[in-house]
Length: 187
Image 1 (cartoon, rainbow, N blue to C red):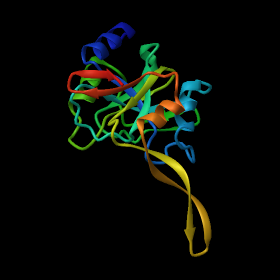
Image 2: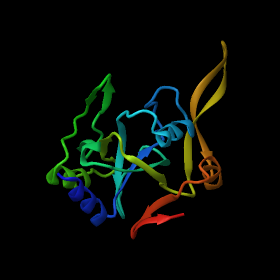
Image 3: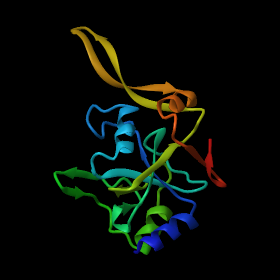
């Protein structure tokens, strides 16, 4: 698939490619907002697991807030899949159940998502263009918290509820989108 074909397909579907601040430990001990700031900094070209969201999607995404990415080339999209692709990077090798980008794999990655699941695109080198919030009234992020245990205090990674104003404070110069049945909407 060419870059122009990719852009046209994303535009026609009103799709956003989003790398979420993942609820699970995708990149070690990184927590919000540091994880997303690293994506905006573009200091490393590591593969990012993303979901591609379209108007009225019924996916159960893996986070509440994420970075919207815009591919600079078709090669920025490494693999696409209609479910969790079990993707990970090992050195310079990218492992994924996903398929190379083609017209058929693009369509399947959006059309075959099972209810309660999500699609996974592996993306590297795409331009961060703003933030995405799944539900502005219900934002939950990963943070480090102190936990008192019988043997002492430990630092754990736990969910924390925040509000839209806190996202705006953390990323004051970034546009923020959400998605409804009519398409992407700026907040």
